[in-house]
Image (cartoon, rainbow, N blue to C red; front, top):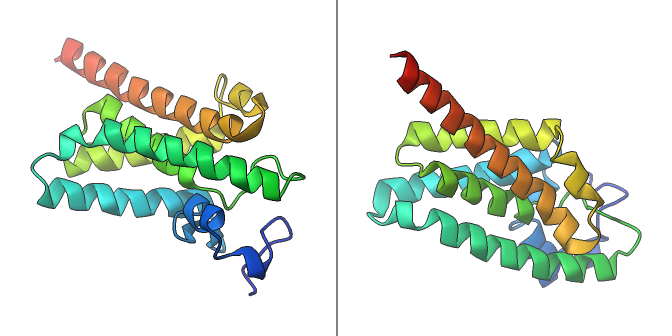
Length: 170
């Protein structure tokens, strides 16, 4: 498979539960922008929840918690199987957890809020400003997850500040 990289698991391990789960159903093996592709899959799920589930606002934080737990569990299995890799680029379940955390902290209640959360989270996850980058130093699967959760908090904080400034100005 031409899309596999040297740091990706071998073909024989692609369909093991930690790889399928950690790559968010193999979204993490996109040829480019793997984290963005994984988060975009969650964006589509979030928009579907908004459209078809009356209880969607109550789902963001439980989804973040569930994806965080799954990320820690599958991340541990992946790191045990691939001990030379610290944070596999194809592992995007942590982005899913953080995206839903962003939506929960924003109390996202519209497609615009969901999309704003997506863009802002991706900005902080890619740019990794302080203190986001410092969370990468945490060892193990917690380190894989922690920087993304920090990016989610910064993304939500950014929108809360923008909203507060907008209210104060007008």
